[in-house]
Amino acid sequence: MRILFKNIKELIQIRESGISFVSGSDMSILPNIKNAFLLVEDGLISDFGTMDACPDTKAEQVIDVTGQMMMPTWCDSHTHIVYAGNRESEFVDKIKGLTYQEIANKGGGILNSAKKLQKLSEADLYEESKVRLEAVIAMGTGAVEIKSGYGLTVESELKMLSVIKQLKKNYDLPIKATFLGAHAVPKAYVNDKEGYMQLIINEMIPLISEANLADYIDVFCETGYFSVEDTQRIMQAGKAHGLESKIHVNQFNSIGGVQIAVAHKALSVDHLEEMTDADIESLKNTKTMPVALPGCSFFLSIPYTPGRKMIDDGLPLALATDYNPGSSPSGNMNFVVSAACIKMKLTPEEAINAATINGAYAMGLENQVGSITRGKLANLIVTKPINSYGFIPYSFGETQIDKVYIKGQQIN
Ligand SMILES: N=CN[C@@H](CCC(=O)O)C(=O)O
Ligand SMILES: [Zn+2]
Image (cartoon, rainbow, N blue to C red; front, side, top):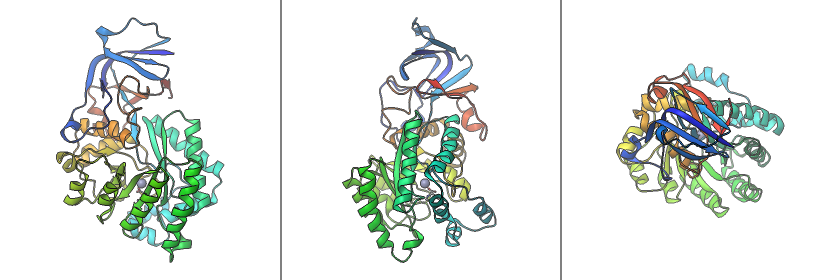
């Protein structure tokens, strides 16, 4: 099946040869072609160029997108889309001035979501989660990572990962599953964190790896949750079972988690709202992708990741939604890109690179998605008629997406 898109006003994020990610000053370069064509064959990008070089090829479908732009779909490398119910009551507590930690201490937070999820059947959890997945695809996300971590028992963590497995099977976009058993210490282990560590290391990880239910392992490395030493032990146990790490770190405190994640060659370190100069220094010249989650900063009214400084210091940066019921109940990558520009002072070029190619890298998907490159998946956004791609982050809270294609199939 061949689809030819023609008269594309601007084809954004073209990369002739596959690159893994962009860093520092290269993040301000967003290669594009004006007045372009794009050819899709059997779900893959097979060719692109200027309209005067448009091949005289027989395509089953020819789509004239005069006045509209095209770009790769967003790559959302950090979500918790599989969860049960919501936490609007905590939202009101937050409005009244309680902090994230205070809400957790009075029985809210991650343990509140765990209680809801433990009671829900796998079938119902799937139904709730698929609604969110479909919504984010319609908002332009074409590759996504989903974490467990609201189960916190062997049975419920497996339930979450099985739901992710079903989503992988039933939806055509790339989905990566991350095991986050170390998200919070469950109530049953409140006086025995070591017991829960043993459960994660000796039972959960081997079971999950045996059943091939996870691609990555994660830890919430934070004061009051899991220490740097705990994080190191879990990363080591994950690695022994073939699971590379992606770590929640520096959300509220800088406690040395970035350094330990880098030392263990983590694929990504995520959150980073509190960064010291030493944290930034330790990320230089490494393969670990820093991931900022501006939706979480917005929702919790906490600092934004110092993305401007990190890029100026030569680092790469990825952007993701952190879609979850407690700290970021939105999976809208368009808003994330706007917030990165408005609050973190990224330029539109930097934010789009961060939300496409760098996000793809943070999921190990840089060879499949994240740029308009021959051979990559035809996961594509067609914008509404707009004057420039800068209008996408500028018009925050609005959608400039007209259509989304996943492997060349129009989904909305
Ligand atoms: N901080 C840890 N985990 C999630 C929030 C989880 C929750 O509050 O339910 C996050 O990434 O922000
Ligand atoms: Zn998260």
